[in-house]
Image: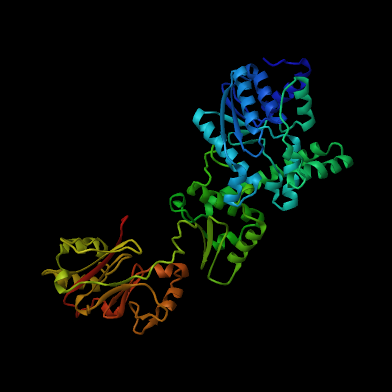
Length: 532
């Protein structure tokens, strides 16, 4: 059993005060301590152990071996034995971080962090831990603050490490490194030194070994001063962040974005926002899309501490690109925000879309179907009362022939309406008592049908006569007038009779096949998505 030196009482009282001040722990909590073998994390484990009865907690220990040092497995074995002595549940995992960083083309530090936190969250889920305690302290906080200040970041990222973030807690955040070392020495706590912490070619180490000591020469209380400054920044940032969340909820146009992976905003609304708020709205947007993708999870067990720590962070340069897009006079622009998200400007809308979804930007194979049809294929029995009641989009057929257009996952159906009430239907259509077309179906003059019937996508130079017009119009000009997104146009099926465009699927039918008082027979076409 460890020896509890009475000289540590001040240290442990400070630990309790920190826990109470930030409400880090509740009685009955199971705390998963993230331990590496260094002085900070081993001291954290002992602190939790010494105070387990006072705090009313249960403890488990999680150790991740990065396999960077040859002796790391010995450290894991020591920690396993220590936990056995202290009757603390022990969990471990490992990965070759050097190899993984090369495979994923990321820095060693980032790769290690990603693997470590993934392990911690999975272990917490497995054992139903209430909190994950890490040993980040005041010196770590200063390093992080300066790293962000040097490399660039907003007030939120510069504010640094949070004391509490979801189930992650950092009860050492007000302790200096020297205080922790003194605690370890007073209690004869065995720990391991990591030689890589002294390699000055590593950015964080250079800040710790060379830059922070210079600041301490100028201001011996530098660490405390920096922490207090960051708290002011954090409170300001939290206020703006909460305001931005409300703006996000009120300005987003599609509430089903978590299923679709697409978030849409009206540019007019965004242009009214101050840049500080707009930046955070964009950051929330990226976060929400990644939650939908599973890259991070709104459940704090699976979310990283700060999105700014990974490749999905919106850099200042990317934010300026976003500003340029929403302020641009060009109606159709797009760019990749990062490897996961694409941003599309489509007239008055700006669309954030996960790249794997690709609804707007996919380059489909050419649709080019000559339909193997003849006159008899269209002879279907239709209930005319259904037509009068429900309009074109609800017509029902018996023994209908369906052709699946796999490129856009749509079923195509064409047929002729037969019955004694044709004139009644025609009169109602002409009087607009029932609709002759809807988004996915049209009724047309069947005698205007000519072969071959063909389905294909848009080709530059296409022309047709839109319903209600007398003269031809370029399909491209029609798309522009109707503000059809440029990247969406290739996904629209065009229906042709005898080489003439008679319907831009889901959008507009041609005047050449409209039903008039001279119509004798009515035909119909339906395009139906498989999920409808």
